[in-house]
Each structure stands twice: as C-alpha cells, then as structure tokens.
Image 1 (tube, rainbow, N blue to C red):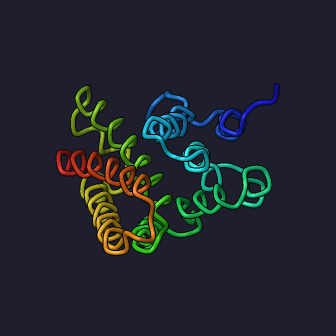
Image 2: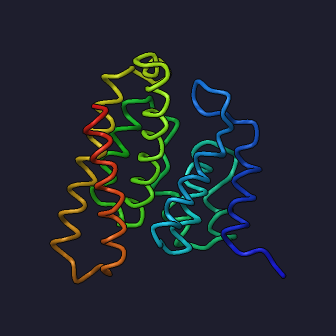
Image 3: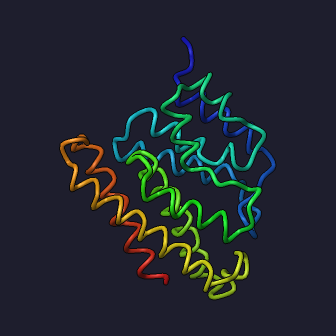
Length: 195
C-alpha cells in the first residue's frame, strides 16, 4: 500500500530540514513543522492545509522549490506555502513588514497556517521563558522589542483578515472560519500574555 500524501510530506520535510536546529537550541528543527501539521490535523483542517503546515518553512529555509511542491502536492498546497514564505533576500524588518502586509489580503488557509506556525513558536518561547527568563529574547533579532512589534503586527493583520472574512461570510465555509477563529483566539491569548 502506498504512503498517503501527509506521510509523503512528513518524509520530505524531514529530509529537507535535516541537520537544522531550532534557534539557540539543540532541538531538531523538524519538530516545529511536524507540530504545526499535527495542530492543524487536530483542528480538523483539510489535507492540503495540513500538508502546507508541514511544508510551510521548506521554500524559505531549504533547497525545496514551490515548483517541486506544486508538482508533487498540488497548487492548493503550493499556494499556501508560498503565502507563508518570507523573502530571505530582504533584511529582517523589510521581510517581516512584507509578510504583515500580505496577511491582510491572504487566503484564510494561509492565515490558519500562519496562526498555527506563530502559536507553536510562541508556545516554545513561553516554555523556555519559564526556564531561562528574559535571556530567551537574546536568540531573536532585535530582542523583546522587535519580537513584540512583529507578533503584535501579525496579530493585527490576522484580526483585520478575520473581520473581512466575517463581513463576507457567504464566501467562506463555516468550518474554515471556525478553524481560523480557533487558532486566532489562542494566538491572541499568548501574544497578549508575552507582549
């Protein structure tokens, strides 16, 4: 029996992220995209959204291309991954600003994966903050102030998208809106707590 598409995505992500570590730790990087994928699966997201969650950092941080993802997993997955990818040719503030702006008009699926991604990142920060305190911010560009600006801005863009989605509720299915709200509320809580 052939592997299913999610298993194929897990295998591909494990190979693509091989040898990478989470920022400032000895933790294998692959834990992050796997956790994002599992969070999306637990929330009942579509197969394409789950796969995009598993592959969301591959184009940004590995040799994998959007063309490869499109060919092997389809346009829906590739479009979500593209919507979650930063342009690493830009300096930190410029690329973060570009993502913040892009989220205002992104698809709800991109916003769901972005929420799950940021939520897992901040859960990790919170867990490590309990062990090492404010030293956690030394791992990140610009420290606490820059991270606060970034996550609050992401939350603002996602909130704008959420209000637009509710205004055009006839164009979205209720399950997708519920999934977005589920992740957004959790992200809002942790951003408010940390920043």
